[in-house]
Length: 343
Image (cartoon, rainbow, N blue to C red; front, side, top):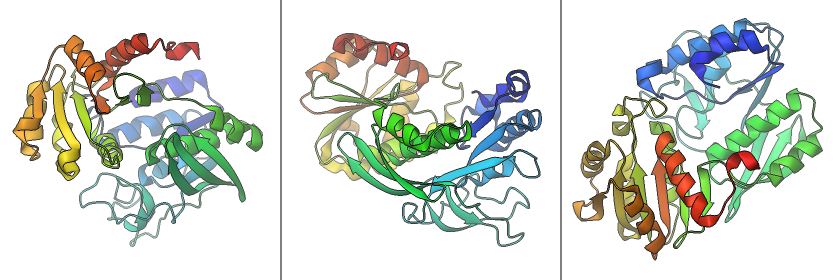
């Protein structure tokens, strides 16, 4: 649900369970900074004190939403063994205590401001997770995951790869548990889930195409990190739109770590910039240090699809939301894939 709508819609729907995932800077023209989005969510929650909250224990902003509220909470998150990164980079939003505002300390982190956090001033700290991701093994078809669910370990296969999709799976488990579903049936259903709509969705076109939705700096960084794991040569298409559903403010591209694409070296064959704001994207990629010889601007969606079809190397496609809808429709038509609403 849209964060802006939550402050009114929660009171109207009166949900039994509310699942909250994470808060990162997104659509600045609508929400400004993340604290405003958090405020909208908290206002909505106060109208439904009987709703069970499923909260990402690794996100201090999400945990802070339930502070001093009567709602019962179920927490999910990554174990310390999975969250083995360094502390968030300086200035990371959400890396401050939701109670007193002091800079948080991190025993470990996964990405962004998510991790095992604690406040050195007021001693507020990450709650223990009821649903914990204990181990992640990446495989070609996704991730094999071991969950600890209220003390018992359960294995599941997640068809969508990358750690942020495992977070989503943990959130789904928490929500299903909160409404009273049997744990074994939850894990079985999770393992049977096939693909996400435009989120790590694969299409058998050309040498293979993978569509990864991007819409904010953290999500873009996660996509880039995943792409860099590829040991083969690949092409990259980035499509940047600025329609209402994308967010009119595209300044976020300057906070995304496109510089990391340089780590791919010769594996990165080409980068094509497209979309309504392709010129700004080209400028950003040039500033990131990517060779101008590798960068192409292409407005025509027809030519983009032809390039994917004729490519001898896999293609990663990173579109913003409205571009993803158009691209997915064209790829689905070529592969005769059913619409996502058809199951």
